[in-house]
Image (cartoon, rainbow, N blue to C red; front, side):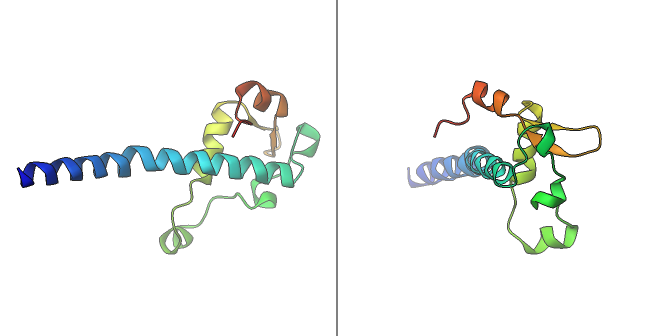
Length: 108
């Protein structure tokens, strides 16, 4: 009986670690990315900025090795896929507040 309980606990911990926790971290990163865009006034096409200007450029391999996992790139991809973050023809990014409002992400 004790072995079965241990296996169940390990299975639940595995599921939490693989599926649930990353989703929680991505949601937190989405709020962080939105805040960064707003702080840099990258709202609307006229305020578009590069990822480097906002500190969101992809990390180098060396930085990835020595730092904790950063969920902001995945959050940025999700926001782009939802058309909340859009890219201009010259490679700059901006937040579409209209789309953000319609998605309901502004709720806590």
